[in-house]
Image (cartoon, rainbow over all chains, first blue to last red; front, side, top):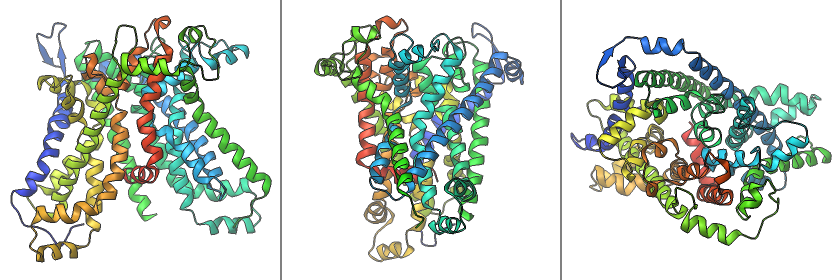
Length: 293
Length: 282
C-alpha cells in the first residue's frame, strides 16, 4: 500500500522519524542486544572476568527444576486465567447483547475494572482474602476451609488466578460484545424458526461465529497473564509462599534483583523474548485472517 | 426479532447484576475499609458498612502518608504518576504521529526498514529487557527522574501503525488542494492532517493515559527516592511484610485514589475509550 500524492524532501522525513528511532534504538534494541550477548557470557562471582560459554546459561536453566516449574506454572496460570475470565465475560456479554432496558448502564458498570492497575488489584484481593483480617476469609473458615494463602501455595495460586481473571473480565466482555454485535441477527432468527432452543442456538450458531473473537482473546489473555500479572503477584504474594507463585516474568525480576547470575537472568529474558515473538506472530497471522473472514 | 420470554429477560438482568456485584465487591470493600479504624480492621472485625473516619483517613493519606518508614504523602505520589502518565501518553502520540507522517507521505531510502524497526518493538516489552534497560538509564543518569520514568516506554509501534493506517485513508485530493494553496509539508501536516486526526488522537490518549498511570514494574525499578515514587509503587511499599504494622485504612484509601483517575477516564470518556481499545488491538 502506497500513497500516490507525496512530498519531496531529502532531510525532513529523517528528522520526523528521528525521535522515535532514537528512543527505539537506545531503549529497546540496545538493551535487547545486551540481553542476547550477556546470555552467552558467564561472569565470575566478583564481576572481574567474563568468559564466553555458548549455550551453557540456557542449558543450566533447562536443567534447573525451579525454572522448569516456573514455565509450567506460568502456562497453567495463563490457561486458568484465560478460561475463567473468558467464560464469565462471554456469559455476561450474551446476557447484555439482548436489547433491554439499561443496556448501556450495564456496560458502564462492567467495563471500568479495565482501568484498575495490577498492583492495586493485588492489594484489593489480598485484603479481602487475607487470612487474619479478610472479610471473606471469615466465611471460608466458617465453611470449614483452612484458608491461609500466605502459607499454602495452592491457595496463593488460586488467589492470584482469581484476582487476575477478575481484572480481565471487563476487557473480554467488551470484545465479546463487539463480536456478538457483528453477528447478523437474521442468523439467530433462522435458527429460532428451525426450532433451536436458546442453549442449542448458542452452541450451533453463536459459538462458531464467535470463534475468531474467542481465539483473538485467548492470545491476548495469555499475553496478559504472562506479563501483567507481575504487579498482582508482587503486591499479593511476592512470589511466595516459597516459590509457589513465581512466574517467568517474576523470576527474571527477582533473580536479577538479588544481583545473582547476570548470564542466567539474560538467558531468561531471551527465552521470554522468543515467547513474545511467537505469541505476537500468532496474533498477527490471525488478524490477517480476520480481515478476509 | 427472536422472541424473548419474560422469564428469560429477568434471568438476564439477574445474571448481569450478579456480574456487576462481583466486579464491584472488592472495590466496595476498599472504600468501606478506607473509612474505618485500623485497630478494628487488624482484629478482623471490619464492618461491611462505611465508618466515620473518611475525612481523617483521606487527609492523612493525601497530605501526610503512613506513619511507618516510607512517610510520603500520597498526593505527591499522584502528582508523579500524573506527570509520568501524561509524558508517556503525549510522548507516544507525538513521536508516533510524526514518524507515521514521514513513512506515509515521503519516499526516502530506508523507509521500510525504519518502519519495521519501529514495528518490531511490539515484541520487546519492558519485561524482557528489564535489567539491560535499567543499566542504560542508570548510565545516562536518569534514575529517579521523570525522563527516566517515561522515555524508555515512549516508543509505540501500535500508535505508529494506527496513524499510518489512518493517513492511508485520507484522500489524496486534500494534499493536492493544499499544495495548490502553496502549503509545504509542515503546513499540510499542521493545518490539515492534525485536525483530521483529532478523534484518533483522543481515543489513543485515553488508552495510553491509563496505560501510563498503571505502569508498575518500570517505576518500581528506577525510583529509589521516596519523593519520586508513583502511586502504584508507593502502595506496594505500604504493605509491610510484618502484617501487624500495615495501616490498612491508608492502604485502602491509596488504592481508591490510585483507581480514581483512570476509572474516571474510562467512565467519562467511554466512547473514546472503547474506540481506542478496539483500534489499538487491530
